[in-house]
Amino acid sequence: MADAVTSADLAPSLVYVVGRVNQGVRRELRKALGPVGLSVPELTALSVLRARPGLSNAQLARRSLTTPQSMNEVVASLAARGLVARTVDPSHGRILRTELTEEGERLLEAVDPVVDALQDEMLAAVPPEHREIVLEGLIACMRSLSER
Image 1 (cartoon, one colour):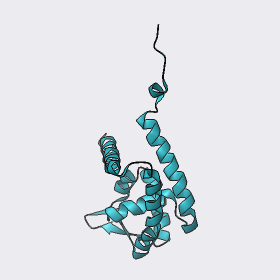
Image 2 (cartoon, rainbow, N blue to C red):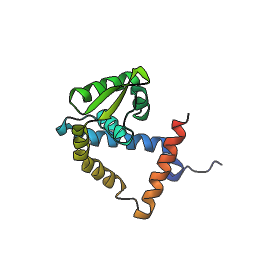
Image 3 (cartoon, rainbow, N blue to C red):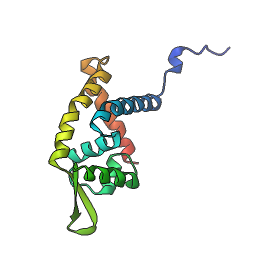
Image 4 (cartoon, helix red, strand yellow):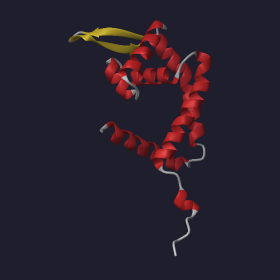
């Protein structure tokens, strides 16, 4: 006779949970960023550029988890609004390097509390002593997938 299936046997997979968290984060960010006229891909690009100024479009696309074609549109929109500046790479004339402008820095600083509040809300039910473990585990997962 087969064992009965319990609810523990039906626990969601990590892949499913990460996908649902991603959907929720994107939904909440869309709502929060709408009033400042910023999209989630734009926020992602600005955040990546804050940590790594001077990336090429291809590098920025990889780090932002999008295609180079989509990133071209995002960067063009950000540049038109004065949030980023692009300069020609001196060693390779066809590569444009992108950096935040002062206006881009100010906008990111203005939305940082929104992102922080969302993160706090997500972690509210996680005991404080486990929060670093959650982040470290997700970073390890991210790096494993980035190496593929």
